[in-house]
Image 1 (tube, one colour):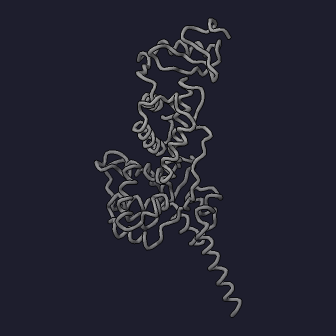
Image 2 (tube, rainbow, N blue to C red; image 1 turned 45 degrees about the horizontal axis):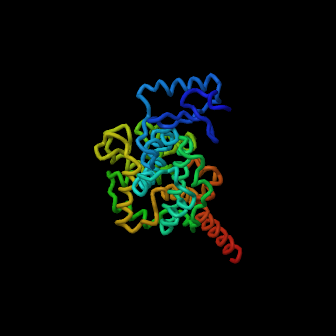
Image 3 (spheres, helix red, strand yellow; image 1 turned 90 degrees about the vertical axis):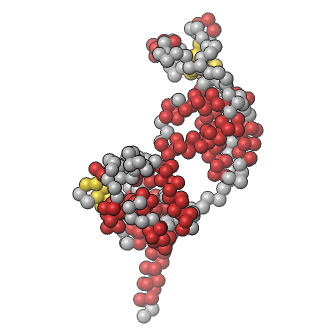
Length: 334
């Protein structure tokens, strides 16, 4: 297609059609050229109420700022957004003034390998960089994504396990009733829900002696009866907000970052750094299996798929089955 067929400031590139004007950020058209939708997009760009989105320099700092304004970033789950922010800030610190258009595959690999001693950090950084550079392509700043296809570092993944009962008892002894650290643990263990869902719980969710839960990740709706230990903790909690777990001022819900930091301090005090908040969900599933519950009954509390029930409880399941087998063996030999 000849350039003259395109309207002013519109250019065709290998991966699409872009609006590009001096002093304005490049914008990719989502609609085919010549359609009514295309002309509406074009008119919308020219009539932006807040004026043109100016870019002072095409560096990583500007790229990160633009990415944080995009739907791709705004649609992230709150927890994922916090994780992304750590790596975006890291990129700004080490290469904020660098030109992303000049980044090559070898540069991506060099950055990954520079953090090889922190494999989880290195791999997560690579994932975020892959997304960021895809946004760079969408802006028309470059034609390809140098992070795409770069493999992550191989790691030996340590499987998460439930808290040992003695550590759970020590945590209860250390974190008194009435504290947020104690209450968040009782909610996680007592309901078997993910920490994100627990932090969203409101007093109004308590109905007929149980919690009405709508899981953020799966959309499943559950009613989970309240255990005696959890009820005691709830009775000791302050009700100064619609949320059960609140920030220090009691004005809003407790953030994931705040809860994670507070629980980590408690874990450090009792030597439980090998077990995290999410491990409490394992405790709930394993306690149900040890009580003789079928997978269906476990799932009725945790909301997990059959495969995840097996994954969370495979070690305790083997122990329960081995005890049963040895008991039958002993009875046979009498």
